[in-house]
Length: 321
Image (cartoon, rainbow, N blue to C red; front, side, top):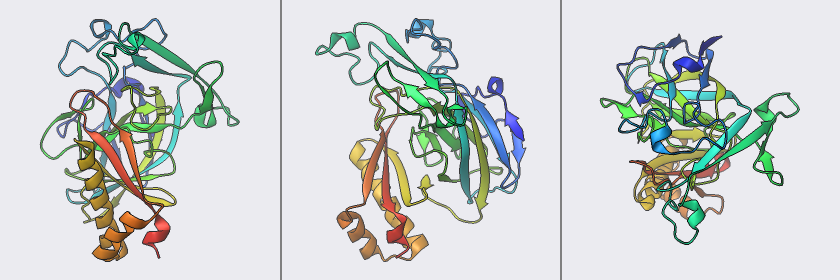
């Protein structure tokens, strides 16, 4: 199986001029070994998020959130849709979360001075599950609190149309740093393609995350990710879509949040109308009346130029009725 080793998964931009690190065929599985968002800086709670200590933070924007790629998919052309199946994610034996002055929405808090007076790093131990790996393991928040590891890919996408966009705060219809917990094993991710070969990248795996990623960091970790890429020829979609086994999710990122919510909802309506034959009137009324329609707020971080990421979700049974 072809693989991008971790030492080569250190790109900090989605760049259509990058030389491909792998060339794969449709349906061919391959692996990318990813760094965490700090490129390995956080190893213990003594490693603080002080910018002057962190390698790459003398750059603007900082060299953070490394990705592996690009991967060239044979036969991919502008105007096609890329279908990404996430087959497996095995995370490292720990993850981290870092807070401190001017980080996140409470980085200047006077109500709780401990959140803004000093830098704090938390390290979360991972223990294997029945498989003997972290694939089904447990994250230990502290001695009393733990939960199942629920890994996903935080930064994923193809090379944008003409611009070069950083992996730290780049977002768009092509993907980017979106931190969507549904970009996870068992789900299929759909993206529009802008260049021959698709030029696919991924990185920034999280062991788990709460909605909005409120502090600006989740359970950041290294991982080995196995995926396969396929094509839907001649089909163009407006933004990322996610096919879960039992539901459809349309994605958008924007500011303010209500724009992301409204746009994701109209993208979901378009999906129901175009692919499932629903009338515009039925789709419009469905998202307003169906008790199973959901808006997911995946990422709402006050970091750089990041927009807020929303997903409009409906069970597939309504689309197939």
